[in-house]
Length: 250
Image (cartoon, rainbow, N blue to C red; front, side, top):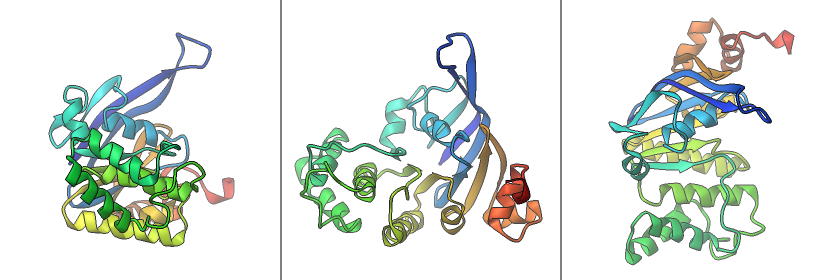
């Protein structure tokens, strides 16, 4: 389970040391085991910053976050061992093949040689990567890079999975395959936290959704619950109503 409460994070304004920009303000949410939880918001809403604090890559200015009872600030190693993280636009090592990229991360996670071979083969099959598994990553499409990055996140079989814009660059069939994988992980009891600005993906995949706008979580519920709270019959309209805008103003 992933728990966040009253997270705040500011960054120095470009060219000014003293003045800061508040990126995340009082963000809190709970992502439970056996569920897919979505962070939904426009680009720049604070989703990626929130996720980076949850996985221990950024230290919050205040507030707290726990992963399976581990504090993300005090227990960084334990948190990283229990999380698979797919960052937005994750880079892959261009001079390594897809297989080598995954194997390298598996070694960093402490798997032995046989475990690495078996797990890499399993992930290549799971993500349908056979056609490019032994090609160098230089020149890969965005979808191919995303698959490699996802395989790296899954390589140590983490209990918790944090995915920042995971369908970025994926075609329809690849997106459907990814969705299928996430559903299987959910059924196995994994905690999955996904950020996206694509409402269709969130509405199809997620059991629970937190809407984030201008660095704040402004509403949290199931997809159906959000529509009922906002009095809308369409999820897109519910999102627009939640952030306090109307389609006519756009």
